[in-house]
Length: 178
Image (cartoon, rainbow, N blue to C red; front, side, top):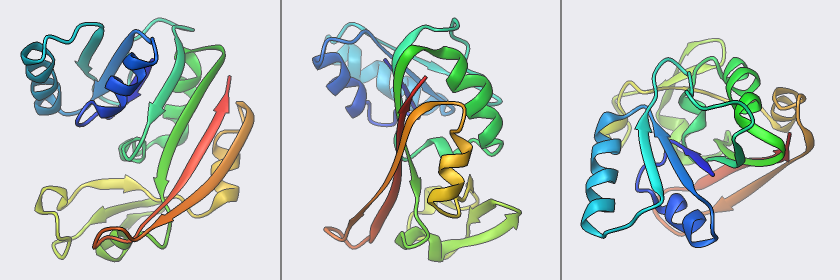
């Protein structure tokens, strides 16, 4: 299993618990170092973390049964190319994926400014200072997501809404298989 943008490695720990050999790819060297320190401290094996650059995942073709990218994949600004040329390539035939995207009613959208076309950035009014200036691909709607993943089979798109915290979290999720 591969988790793109693994952050706290929570998804990787869950996938490992389900019996997968796990890999994590993140654009943040800090996340990779922090994750490796955690794994070493807790004596956890079977999870391998690495940094990736320029939207290129350096894994062998057809190598993963499952690829996840929750609250992260939209930071790949040439998203369609990333999905078609990277995700499709590394998934095994019948391999599954799940990705999440901000919906237009997510609280974070109000802290965004348009950069160009579908690319937005978090402006200085964003409550999380670490996100200032971060650019992301903003998905318009369900139709766009279905079109974006048209190379895959059994694609399903659904939306979740939660206001359990001070943030109104509304996400699009896309699942499917190669």
